[in-house]
Structures are given as structure tokens and as C-alpha cells.
Image 1 (cartoon, rainbow, N blue to C red):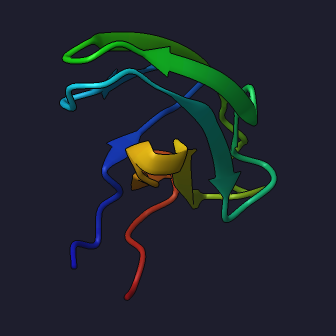
Image 2 (image 1 turned 180 degrees about the horizontal axis):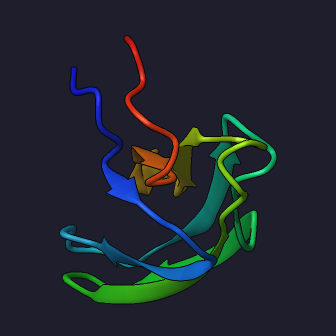
Length: 104
């Protein structure tokens, strides 16, 4: 556990997510974004994705950053649904630099 968020943002920004298919067959599916706070919003909330074998894609997702008094931090979770290709999950903690230290 760390008292600091994984990433700190002061204003709205673009987040670049790199996705990979290390398999030997193409995969297609959906990425779904969830947030522990509705004030922290990564858009779009759902994206269709197709990857060929050994392909890497960079997806740019705009992040809405609230003021620290509204929501000082949040967990962002991105879930993949790729059928036989698997169900990967990425989760990271974001925060505002003025929010201070979070207690576990």
C-alpha cells in the first residue's frame, strides 16, 4: 500500500492506454471503464476493440478531473471482455495534488 495515488492530475487531460494481444489469434471485444467516483470520468465508458496477433494499439481516453473538494481521488478500473481471448482488468488510483495524503 502507498499513501500516494498512482497518477496525480490537476486539470482535465488525455490518458493513453496501450493494449496488446500476445496471442496467436485475433481478438475482438469491449473495454468498459468504471470509477469509484462519478466525478472522475474516463471517456468513453465503453469501447469496441479488435487486435490481431502480437498487435499493440494505443487508445487515448479523455479524463475529467474534478476539484479536490468535490472528489480528491478515485480508483479507475478498465475491464476487457474478449470471449475466448480473456477478461483482463487494469485498476489504478488517481488523485488531485491538493488532496493530501489518503489513509489506508
